[in-house]
Image (spheres, rainbow, N blue to C red):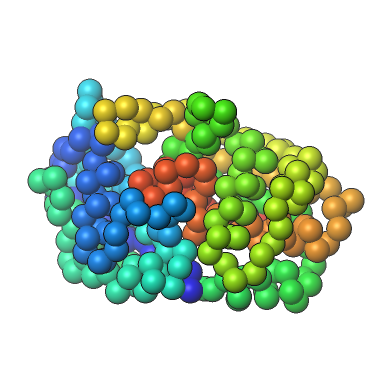
Length: 255
């Protein structure tokens, strides 16, 4: 089971919370779901933080009345997905002295078997052009530092590592990443850097959108595996610290 659950939130008055709120909020939500945090080598949940328009001043964010915000949680295992599906925020979400009203909830539910069957096993006509949006700061740990760039090999490795760890179907390893990263091309991008606060430090990430293209020389099976990984990114997130609010990714594709 895979789930991506998104709540729509509003606030009746300006909510001022610390820039580092994500850690406290994700701890609170995991406690409500009965899930441990920090014990998994590869996290089985992803978290978006609050997405929408806000202002910032020194160490605080201000979330405004009459604005709409979204909060997403995704589960990558049966256990975490069921916990997210059963999470009941009732009519409001309160943390760090702020109160948000829950106005809507949407759930996208699928499974590893279903994704693999529909996108690979049934041999659909390959999709070779993909659009991705990175909603929260996205970065990669590379050679002892942070790299806030959508490098194809790093994105692919991020998605493949989680798929191979949690899915019952193994897709491939370094050879697949190497082949696809050499073939895939970034056709367009609109990116900006943003800092993401964790504890007392910051990680620099990127947000924005990119378009990727696979050439026709890439055989259909491999193109479909690439499509599968890109669609999986909507659940797994991209890059580092996806459990804490980084790397939220949504995708759309066209032939």
